[in-house]
Length: 516
Image 1 (cartoon, rainbow, N blue to C red):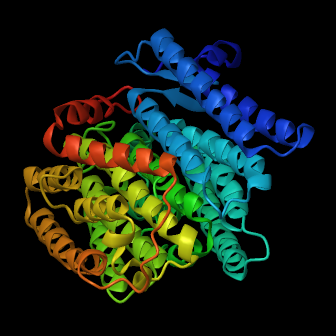
Image 2: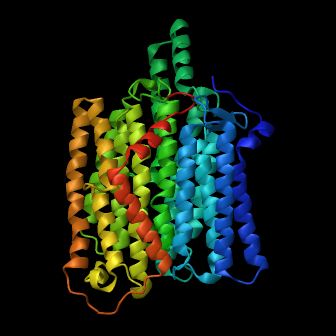
Image 3: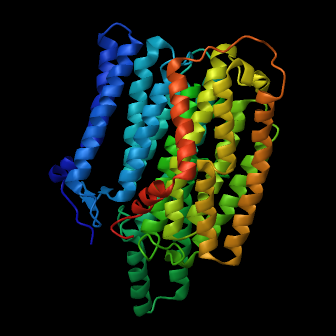
């Protein structure tokens, strides 16, 4: 049984979120009260993140990260290893997105305070998404991430593409939120509570009571159908956050129109929080085993097969749509959709190993995808364009950036000995270990899609190293960008060879609602 704390006692475990909230408000107030100073704003934001890290370590020490997680605020949130893992991941993405924004020309220096404060606010929402166990708190977390993201997508004033991105993001987000809330209303009607802890046990108990009372099988069947509809609607809201088919339509336009530092953040942060929430709903709430196995789930629905079909469609649509793209941000947007499909393979594996592979791949994806968008931002600083033609001869104009971009692209493909290969290997391994004809079929579909992705990634590498540059002008890369590129390349290379520590970290995170 999950121990649950009241509001007052829960505050001792909620320090990181409170510090993030105070940091966001403090940056806003500092920006209003003090003359515009982007350097001071950045230092204040970095200081807030430093205090956050200290508070997170202190909270982890207090909680002990015991095998028995703790319910907070009368069951609205839970502090378990799964939540802690994704909180740290979301904070790392936030810190890197702020570092990328420093020298960026797309984030105006006089508006740096707004940008940093809004990113800290999104980090609060992602933390809530990772630890929510109650449907009301899930809505609050998702909407906090969404609404602030709408503002950041349209951050570039008087830019038509940025305004278009924000508008499309709002429209698609509003529809997805409506579907999610409608599904939650069904779940509340079926369960009599908004809390998802023990959902499977309650549904099974209700079915047994109906059977003992002699209720017609058709009535029980109607209840199962309602449960399926409700879960599908709820997962529609989550599918929108991770940009899986068929909820992916917003992704290319938003990625292209938003400032590149925020696009880099959007491609990893909300996606990771969405997967954390999806796994918590499917494995932690819908699964009879309480998190270790999705194959025995409520409503007699083959959820692994359903997720597997979505995974196959997502990676196929993403990869084939990326083939003819000439705009790098749109190409990486479709690549991001495809990678959502790869990660869904881990969810479809319907096992603890599958959840572990999801966590591991998201860490690897953080390094290589943020690095790829960082290079796009570097080239865009000089040319103001994301066209692939700007990358011709990049090896002569910015050698280190070209080499780093090649490393990130080959890692995204999944070539050894890079970290992307390790991540994809564990996703495929989870499917193969599970066994079964459809799991093997899904793994083959994923392998073929990886081969397709090599084409459009290699096209960029060819342009950088084999094509003649259209100008001999060197690209002045800020020192902070070179340092960050070096760190990200180093992590991609190191985790491609020494991955045991990362695998153990991901494995220790697979504890949901007190079950592993």
